[in-house]
Length: 412
Ligand SMILES: Cc1cc2nc3c(=O)[nH]c(=O)nc-3n(C[C@H](O)[C@H](O)[C@H](O)COP(=O)(O)OP(=O)(O)OC[C@H]3O[C@@H](n4cnc5c(N)ncnc54)[C@H](O)[C@@H]3O)c2cc1C
Image (cartoon, rainbow, N blue to C red; front, side, top):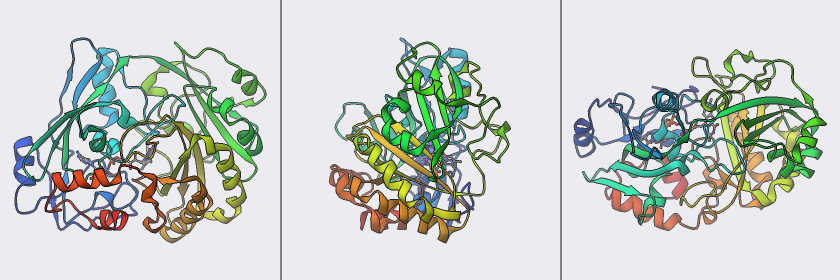
């Protein structure tokens, strides 16, 4: 069995597919307990183990609280399915990643994010979490409880998340426009204005001289025209729908050209019924503090040549700070530099290391679900890493969920 991109062949000898929570509980405390697998969209071996528990056949449910501010939902459903379940309730979550195909549990476990100066990553919408641990216990925590902040971005290492409570808000509309004509120099010098121009903003570049495309998603209800409108009016607005990789067909992408639509039809770049991104690809992503944004853009501009043919496209996004221990955005408003590489593992690893080295001076943190070199990881940039490892020990005292990826990253 392979991951979505096909660059990882899972080595697990046993593959469970429980259909009921009682069955899941028996598996976790049985002879071959294993690590949870979501929709397989990670690009490294984070989800592998001696055994895998595929969560995709577990029962689906969604319950709304009485004041319509939160839903309790089965954690293995995809965001695409969550959107369908929220639609008749006219409710939304605050943000989505570039694609709706990923499971809620898999996404929050790796700190998956969209964009937006005031938008935390997807894990920040989690107000409560239920995790079945290999000790047979149900760890049921809500925001504010001791250990809660260690459980949400849990890297699959604490047990199997069976349900989450997500903050929801009334459904909202978004319009999306794409602009050409921004140089990398202007991106660095006007970084705050560029990213204040919408609810969710993405700058796509290949680190040559320009931002190839600036995608601006504005909320129809709240985004007032601001000073940054001046900046946008100096750019060239696209007159046809685009794909982030310019030569690929735009039919895989959400509607642009300023046509207002449901939050769920605009916040992701890709639509559910098509292959997102390129398909044959490998990804890496690195986070730095927002205050280092301009310097990091300049640093990456100087290594653009070294990324060479490995790079298909890069995307710059912003994410609000959070307090989740292992989140790449812990304690700092962040800028994320994403890279879609060609499907050549060695070339991707080499180029990924060039990026990590270029950003080293900025206490860089990698995306847990993408390709990075654990040898270049500075765990000192996560102040709560020891508390997290203690939590892992308590949930999984016999390390039955441990895998090679975890050993390399945490050196244990
Ligand atoms: C085309 C593409 C586009 C992407 N775009 C973005 C993006 O816009 N933003 C971004 O941040 N990332 C993005 N990613 C990365 C992706 O969001 C993460 O890799 C995410 O973890 C995928 O979720 P998954 O369900 O596939 O998880 P998997 O890869 O299946 O698993 C990831 C981790 O979650 C754990 N896990 C899964 N289910 C459970 C469970 N029920 N309980 C406990 N642990 C569990 C696994 O053990 C593993 O540790 C993209 C990936 C692809 C392929």
